[in-house]
Length: 306
Image 1: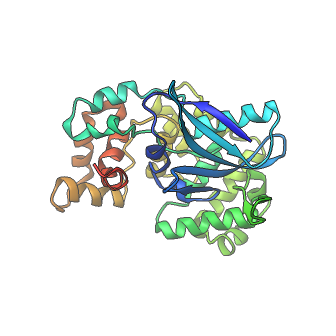
Image 2: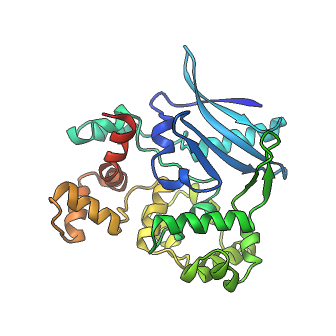
């Protein structure tokens, strides 16, 4: 089944897909040649589908085409469109961000290529778990942990066209039903195991509602503290999660950011975090997003050859 979704005039699907590493983590997959993003969606009706997202350019407007693996009723179509819109940040406004970028020569490329929208998951829970899986480890280990979570705890899906088994991201109930030992041994979560287990159990018991974070109308500092209240989410993880929640006030500096900043702005010479903070402070509430654009510019140069 094919669905059409309208997009803002400045939206760029390729920039959004490859905005950070989520597109490489299950249940996402991507095709660079085709410029498409595919993921499994576990609908509230209980149906599981595969949805491929591609550009659909027309003379009148830009749109996205979502090709689903099976027919959907009107309610399911609405849900799929909503999930695609939230994952691709289609309803967030970046006019102010692009206006600020246009004031700085080194960031002229950002609005030109529709950069700035950061891909996010179907749920906040998925984003939080994945973010915890990025802490204090290599990206390769992050990929292993997420793959194990999907294949060992996620719901199974078989595409009738290929008969290949695919796996959804596990829900809180699935993780809550395991043990710390299982998460350490089978998922290879290491020290993160008790954090993943506790978060999942708290959600199942309705002690915490992290899905509400995407719509809470509260100051960023307050939201930051709520995110930090989840065990296993330190300042780095919380700052990056804020970006996926539409708040860009925090830099979320880690060793990779420091390395890239030193290389780009200090000829490889190390400096303190205060120097990094001072550099991006000029961008105000957008400073976290400007940091990410600045340090990942080489990704975009490679993808768009500018």
